[in-house]
Image (cartoon, rainbow, N blue to C red; front, side, top):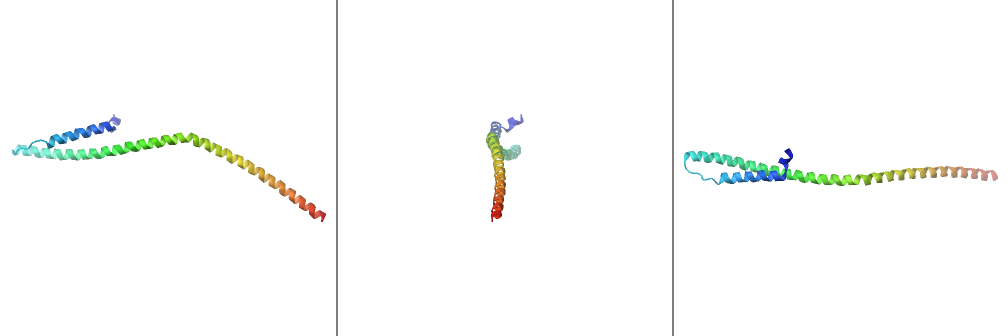
Length: 131
């Protein structure tokens, strides 16, 4: 039931009823009779209160509309993110695999460099022995 009160249709219905009540109260004729002046004063107070209520409802209705728009925007953004998650997860796995392969390659290069440095040291030692 709570969701029903927040629907745009319900908000417009409330605004329409309050607007009609304001029109009815402001359209009444006021006679100069004292009892009717008192009644008219009561109507004026009621009209003022209804106008204030109407303004508050307008503000609340605008706020609800803004919140509904925000909810729709956030839902759309959330859906876009949810659609991207599997692709990004797959790309992350590929990047991790690529990093592992690069690290293995670099370890191989490091090992080859050590072997070449040993060969170079051995060759330099042989050259020194020949001299």
